[in-house]
Image 1: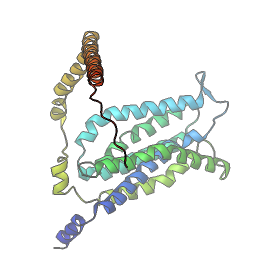
Image 2: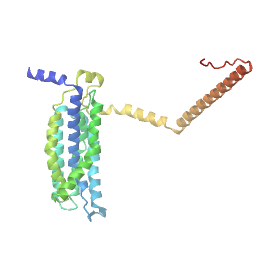
Image 3: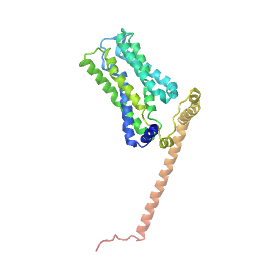
Length: 288
């Protein structure tokens, strides 16, 4: 009985309240992901090199490789992730990223750069998991826009936090990312739990969008034929022969429009001249 009343209250929640709650939570959650991933950009690592390459550039490349690898793995794991597993995924990914930051501070140079590969690997799927709490709703577009603000702001905020730790707290460049991560990790876990309390899509949401379901390997593979067809059609439409034909048709239409306008202009001038010669020109009326 209590559960049914709780669900009724969720259904009665106004859209604007849900947008503020869900959008704000997603925005803060992904901002904390940046706090686990980007603070090292505040460090200079001046004078350090790895294999003839600037140390900071090498660290950035290694982390990016882990991040891109996670995006590829996410095609499988995010599509198969059930709603009840989202919180575990968030906590596990955040924990692995913090462990990687601790290893970055513990391991000697240059071997510690490998730790940031696992930092990027653990965080590359977080956008998809957080967004899965928002999709399938009438307000999804607004919620996605709010969440997207984090990409514009959070990198700078994470770097500012790193600079504060370096300049005010006098933390080492190698331990500063772990310190910022230790602050972000529990907050991200709490916000992940908060997102599990979002109301499920209503019947109106489902009618407007569609039911979000998990996909196994066979179902994912079935998406490829239509995607291949769309890609082939797009390439075909952009072929040189097709582009030339479209240009020719467009020039042909422009030529006919110009001939039509020219004909109408000549006809109008003839009518005006005929009216003037016949004396059928009436003076303008003036108020007496």
